[in-house]
Image (cartoon, rainbow, N blue to C red):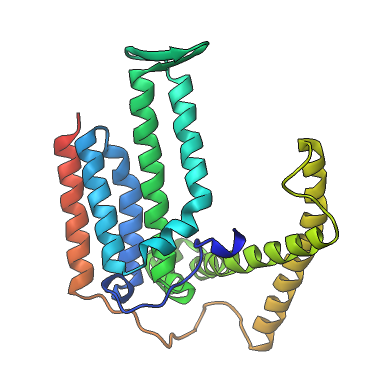
Length: 265
């Protein structure tokens, strides 16, 4: 399962989304996170779904790859749906099984919140799948450049976010490697009482923390050896280029926002 996680990974391809400027992709993700809360009925959620799958189609990321990578998240989405279904007690009573009662508003809210969660995960995953960590760093630093006037460490923050995204798949692979080593020594992670499973996690966490600190130290030494002293006075080898594709995608998202406002219940 660890090897199939897609968040933080970059999949090289020659698609329209891959060719977009990282600044436009970051703006689109930020606006999407904001406008998705405007959706509150079937029509608006249908528009959000059409736009999300339209972007997935433009990215040329295989649907099977996305499905495999999002399998662990699907269970979380289903858990969210069940929680809304059981604890929202508004509207007409649809049916009940013993003490469990399902109301119309609970079913509606469960579906809507689960869809919102699912679309957010798809779009944020699409950002990392189609954008390299270096491009994300450059895009963030450029967008946040005005904050330098108030002495905000823009370059350092962008670099930290880039490193964090880059090491998510690495830590997942490291976790999987440690788990297989512990299983070979007789540790059971998926069977037995919950108390025993929690105890079995301790031999997993300690070597993972040690490995993480070791990687962080090696990265710091490597950066110092190459003369890294922050972003002041640094030049960029890769220059960002905003084109018509980026502008058209922003316009499409603005049109989507207007439609969501007009179609809200």
